[in-house]
Length: 127
Image (cartoon, rainbow, N blue to C red; front, side, top):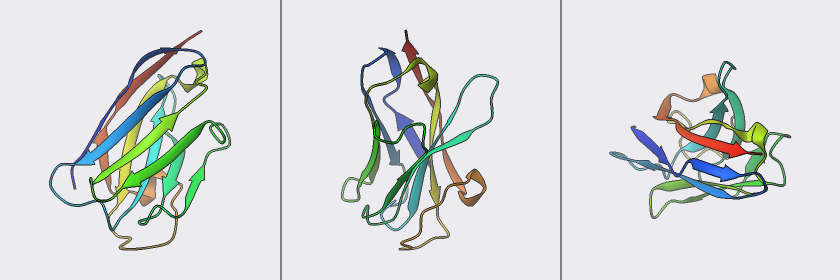
């Protein structure tokens, strides 16, 4: 499945952005999904995960309480609402799908568990 993420941009510290990720060819509604981020010169890190129904979510400690991941299966879209942004949130953000986990209630936290990735969308938070 091909994913496309968008919604990144430049924002001041304390501001908000909402990232979106859509599938261009196949439905996302049956898959577990995740968001990851990669800062310049650093490894890709887990940000958030959501199960197929949207009933369960999990967040990295660094974003807990500030970021919210949600999905609209009718629109074939997953979102990452980012509030109270900090300069250390600056990174390219990637959405990912685990297409092997059909209608699974499980959440997935490592990049190796995802087999489909979108291109990154850059988020820059200025101080």
